[in-house]
Length: 80
Image 1 (cartoon, rainbow, N blue to C red):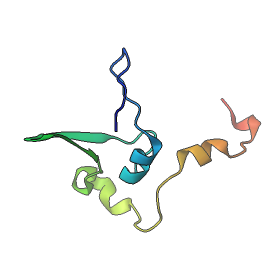
Image 2: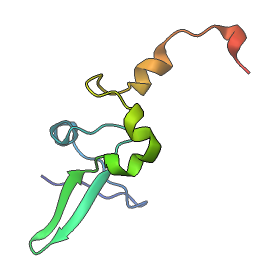
Image 3: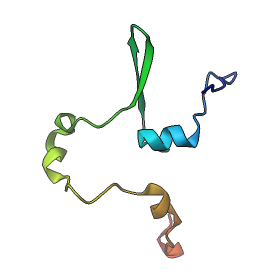
């Protein structure tokens, strides 16, 4: 598979690659250099880096869908 690098050194990955990695907008990817080239993998949150938040995260609830949250209707009187 070949991807194109833009003049800003950005790369667009095919959707099926990102789906296979389980990543979406806002997620991070890690590039690890090896003997045969680079390995691309999703960058997961290390729970040990969460400090005091570690115990406040409820497991099994899934992830927060920011796009769905933004699509929800809001009371216009609550805007600043």
